[in-house]
Length: 394
Image (cartoon, rainbow, N blue to C red; front, side, top):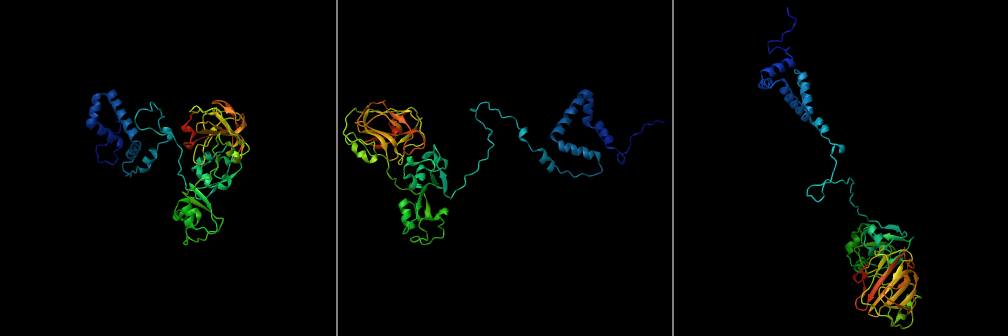
C-alpha cells in the first residue's frame, strides 16, 4: 500500500487546496503549454520578469491578491485609497538632483528658491524714525517705499525742505503713503486744505488714519487744532534754500549766504566750454538731482581732492550759513557757475583765478551733512539750475 496521498478528483470537493487548483490550471492552460515548450530555463526567466513587473507596478494589489489566495472562502473588501495615498507621497530626497546644462536652451526650469513671499500689508499709522550716521534723504525714502519729497513734506519743521538739514539723532515722521502732512489750525476747513495740496476732500476723509469717516460738516469739522492729518497724494511748492546766483560782476549778492562772500568785482579766466568731473570717486553718496535738491552728492573720502570743473574766478570761498558748510563758487565768465560744498578745507580765496583741473579744496562733511561727500551744483544764465549729469560725466 502506497503512503502517498492522492489529490482529490472532484473540483466540487471543499478540501481542494488553492495550490492544487493553481497547478491544475497551469498544466491545462495555453500559457502553461507555452512555458512547457520554452523549457524550464527560458520559461523561468520570462515568468520571473512578469512577476517582478506586476509586483513592482502594483505592490498593494499584489499583496491583496496573496491575501485572497490564502483565504479563498473569506470574501475580502479591498479599499486601496489609503494605501495609494500613503505610497504616492514623494519626499524632497526622492527628487533627482538639479543640474543646469545650458541656461540658454528653451524649456521649463525648476526654481530653487524655497523662500515664501509675503504680500505687503497696508500701513495707516505714521512712524517715527531716528536718523543714523550715513543716512540720506533718498536712502530713507527708498527703505520705506516713499518718494524723497514725502520725507521733506512730512518734516518741514526739522528739514525745512533742505535735504542737507538731515542730521544724526533727528526723529522724522514717516508717512504711510506718498503725500504731505498737515497740522490743523483753528479756522481751517477741509475744502481749503484739500485745495491747497491739490487733492479732494474725499481723499482726506477716506484715509482711515485721519479718523474723519463720521464727519458731515466739511466747512467746520470737529477737528482739534494741533491735529495732524495725512494728505494722500498731496503736493506743495518747495521753499527755496539753495545759494543765490553769484557772478564775477556782482559777487556781493552772496553776503546773505555767509562769511565766505566776496565783495569786489573780479576778472580772470574764461571757461573752456566743457566741464570735467570734479573729484576722484565716480558714484553718488545718496542724493541725486531734483527740484528740492539742485545738485548731486558725489561720494568720497575725507580730504579727497576737489577739482575746478572749468576755468574761472572764485566768487565765494568760505563758510556758508545755508547748511552748505565750507563752500567755493566759481564764475566761469561764459554764463556758467559751479558750486562745491561740504568741503573739509578751502584752498582758494576770493578773486583767485582757478584753471580747469586745479585743486580748490578737499571733500568733507561740514555744514548739514551726515558723511563725507561733495555737493556739486551747476547753474547757467540760459538754463538756470541744471542736472550736472547732463553736462559732465565721470
